[in-house]
Image (cartoon, rainbow, N blue to C red; front, side):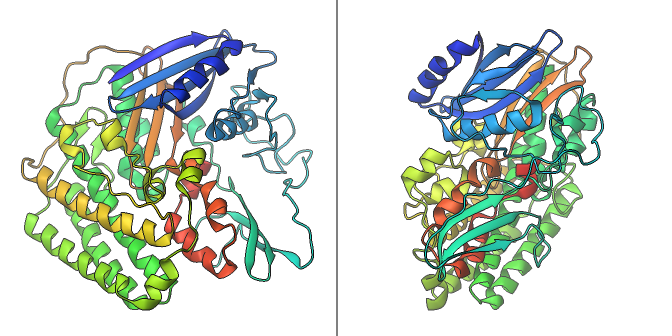
Length: 491
């Protein structure tokens, strides 16, 4: 792994960023820092293989912090800039869409929650007015507002459909209803006390976020990790991928009326959750990863894994052999390869649209955890997202069986520290896609800044694009095929 840091002036930023993007890097993270001498913005560009991480540190005027926008170079950059303005008060100069992204209308004007002087959340202040939704006008056009409170046990988000008949002309997703200030809550914590917070960023991704956090603090604090621990971590990451993908297969079938297959898929998921509990002591695999290592109570039984694989393949075959299921999946909400690339999509959303993005290949932390191939399809529809999941399940089962063969139950073992850097980056292929976490530490190893980027931040903008020219009844199915995290996005 190669990680370089370059200090730049604001005027130098666009040129250097353009060079990195042109050479195949992607913008993985943008983090604002309120340092003692001023304001600093960190841009993290990544590429791989080989694993390459390039940081651009831009120093700004503390009294009037502003950066030249990179929106013309990267759609993802434009959203990072809007997020940074809403939370830190840093202005992206000449931004083509200067609407607020995170801020809701009841936030007081001039209050930026990530600023060091923000203090506790204030009472409702002078309102900024309703969110500036784009109104679609014309004969027969009407709007359907959905949420943020939904008729199910799901997180809050507002979806505004502009429709003619049943055809969707435009969809706008308004998020950040569950913004909790997670990154602010990390500040001042010890490395150990930061771990439970990382595990709870997105409840279904305890291992992914915990591991990205641990890898970041390990690089920052110089904490070594044994190869055995790295393999155990990879095992837990694949177990997390398995139970989430299996649940999604069932719920996708349920959304097209095949509740029997959903019941069978949830039965298999329950088997996997019980396997998780015997492996780490927690059904969602919490406490399995910690700074410096991993913890296994038991190792999965290969016979049990084979039986699980057989059940999943049977469920998949029944689903794909059912005319109604295949008809509803095929051609629904297709996301083109070009659109997925332009939006910066990650994970199974990207792979269903022909992009083989996978941090296990680009940024491996153990060779034993890298898949031999990355499943991908090109149609970008619900069927493709279903098929990518089924193929990833096969890959994960093979990896778990391979990793389990050489692992034994293990407890924490502390090793001497080395090569402390003071800052670090963790990149992990979570079950939804690539998770990136960057941390900075004080000399006594307390967290001063933690920036987390869940793959849902990159994938949410793709949902309205995929739904253009589809029909309103296809929204629940499409939404489930993306299955994005509100909590991971909103932080």
